[in-house]
Length: 133
Image (cartoon, rainbow, N blue to C red; front, side):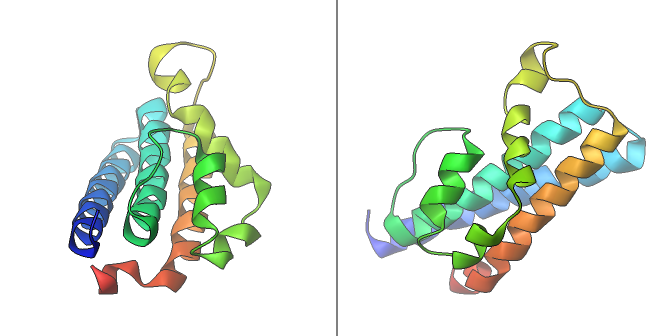
């Protein structure tokens, strides 16, 4: 992928992450459904991390594994290495909360997921990606 394509993919991923974040706000305002909100928190975090990888290395793995994505993106954003381990719990909401009853979510869980997403966004601010694409 050339630099322009990298920027286009990163831009698209950031736009999709922002759509997830708008959905999160709608769910918060509507007082649920909390599981769907947790899913969108995970998705927004995943897309933001993949945008970093798209921009700086040109590709990214097709995975929902937040731990893997953070580990890969740390090469480009050192602030990600300072995130609390709690943030990895976002990964639980990629699939389980949508397809089975093993992972459940309530209002408190939703707000935890929002907090973890904000931690990732805060770390990524140091890159000023939106200014680059």
